[in-house]
Picture 1 (cartoon, helix red, strand yellow):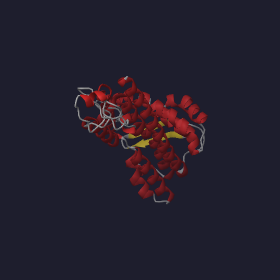
Picture 2 (cartoon, one colour; picture 1 turned 60 degrees about the horizontal axis):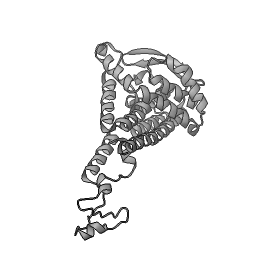
Picture 3 (cartoon, one colour; picture 1 turned 120 degrees about the horizontal axis):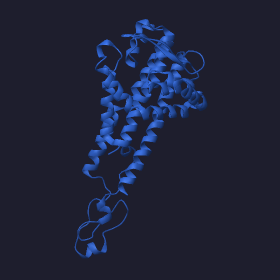
Picture 4 (spheres, one colour; picture 1 turned 180 degrees about the vertical axis):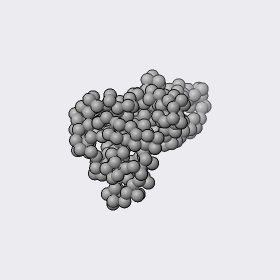
Length: 296
């Protein structure tokens, strides 16, 4: 069962079309009564119509809903981004630094307020793809196995997929597999980011332009499109010197405009939420269409 099953009612089963032995069908869902043939043959009405929920159907829906809830991280992602912005608004840098590890792997001791705002915006953009759009995508096309399989790949990458001496020979495999799994979802996320740009005061054209112009310079084939699109949607410039616990990376500039501020971090959290909602709608539509073809 795919993610789309969570978003729509159950459909009729084969029994609703064929009836039961003797031809009797009791169909309260459609308002029909026991067929004449069934009455003549002495068949009794069935307590459920053919399209009623079966035990198997309930189990499948519960399993899909549980798997979706387990793998999606959109709510906690937005909450952490908003909490970081709140700490920066209050001028509490110690509290803000304590929040940084919840969003990314950067060394918070090396970040000032502007650095933390930038880290938050970039992490919200990238993790909206990784923790929301990608699992919904794979759930829509591959059901529960897609949901859980993607989460396993992404978690392994988060644990060991770093360019550090410790994981140089092992982490690369996890990182490449994660790159492959996110290839399509990241581009979908970038498109949805552009579509949602007006909700945070941005322009879709600016998001698409930054994506087309800047994404390829990013070292990650998937973080590049989503971060560039977010930079364009927010009207800020991302990238630059990025300090991790394992070393320093010089990231290319993404987008036009000033460096992000705390106000932009609030906007990035709203953008992440909007992209997640759009992704859920798209995933439900894809899954519903796939189920319709399967039952045809």
